[in-house]
Structure formats: structure tokens, C-alpha cells
Image: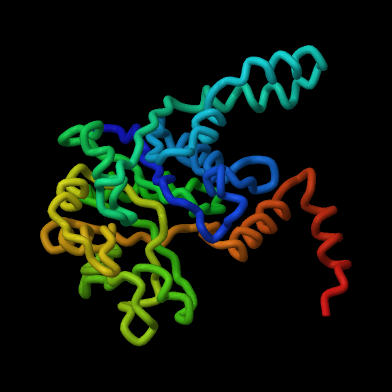
Length: 292
């Protein structure tokens, strides 16, 4: 199997739950401490061996493109003021990977599978790739993307999706997994999108990490809009699972969504507590808060 070198990151949403902060900047540019969300995703992909990052964007997201480009004036100021630590940080950003930007056109259907239609002409006929939702982060020792890539290649799968157990009262927010009976390799028989706990297949939730063969794009092209007239990854994977090996792989680590203000704050706290330069002082601050 050829090495996987491309990661497609879906970042074309409006971030309406974060208005007015997201009026003029993409939600994925909101910081988790001192790095935007999107940079954490890129770093995870690069640490997994990815060399080409494809960002599926929309109009008004030029700040994201600027972030992964060089900033000559700022670099000059930092160099002149001997702020080498910060200079090294910003110089390293555009060198992390090759960055490609594609706009998601408005004639396409809305949905979390739509970016796969956007990239169909730059994914080869036999090429596999990583797909990431731009608001999901994962804390883990082995990068989540690397875990899924290893399973994909070892099992020669058509698709591998990251899943994690979630409380039953929250499963309605996600696609839930139905595992195929009589198998021991986490083979998925089907998914159901945003079903309540009485109708969900399980409390194993799909989140925004996938490794896909080109077959997934081909399936998305044949998949009609589903729930709420949206084009869902889950619907395409349901079709694919009837004829190919689709694996729903529990990941080792902690999935953190940043899709709404509360979970964004939780993710910020988690990452702050992990920081060597901030963790102890921040923990002490939290312990001394007068919360009643």
C-alpha cells in the first residue's frame, strides 16, 4: 500500500455558535492558549507522517491562509529585538507542510461530506488520505491520525473512522456505530446520524478523524442528501460498509470537540493543565476559585 501523504481538513463552516467572535475570523483560528485550533490539527497530521495539508475553506477565511504563510515584517521585528524564541515559532509554521487551499463553492450541497467533493480532482484514483473535521482535537501520546493510519494499512481497509465512547445522553449529537457481529476487528456494519439514545446503535460516537480510500469519495458522489437535507459522511460510509471493509476504531487518547463555547472552554482548560509553563500555576488558580 502506497504511503499516505495528504490530509484534507474541513474548515468551511461559519462558526455561528461563536458569533460575534467569528464574524470576521474562522472558528478554527480561535486560540487554545497561544495557538489556533487549526494548528493543533496540522501538527497532529504532520506528526503522523503527512506532508500535504489541504484546507477546504470558504470566502472570508484569508486569516487562516495568512497564518500558515511567512510574515516578513513581524519576523524582522522579532529578529531586531532578539526575541528568538518567538521568531523560531512563527518561522516554523509555514515549513510544517505543503499547504493547499480549496474553496467550497455554494452550488454544492451542505454537509460534513461536502469537502470530499471539493477535493475529488486532487486525490488520485488509487490514493488514500486523511480526513479531519476542523473543530475536533485529540490529546494522545500516539497521534490519533497515526493510530488510524496504522489500522487502515494493517487491515487493508476501505475506510477507518475514529470513535470514542460517549455518554448515552450525548449520543444524539453524533453518528453512532453498529458493529458487525462475529468479527474481532471493529468492523462497522452501519452508522446512524444524530439519533436519540433510544434509537442509536451504540454509544460509540464517530468524530472528526478518518482515513479514507478513494472509494469513499466515489461513494459520496453517489450519496443523496440525508437527515436535514445534508450530505453526511455517515450515509456514504453506510453504503460503503455493505461491500467493503469499514472499521470503526476506538482511539487511545481523549477526544475534545471545540464546536461550541462550553466544549471550547473545556479543551482550553485541558491543554492549559498539560503545559509545563502554565499547568501548575493554572491548577493552583482553579483550586483556589471560590465556586459556590
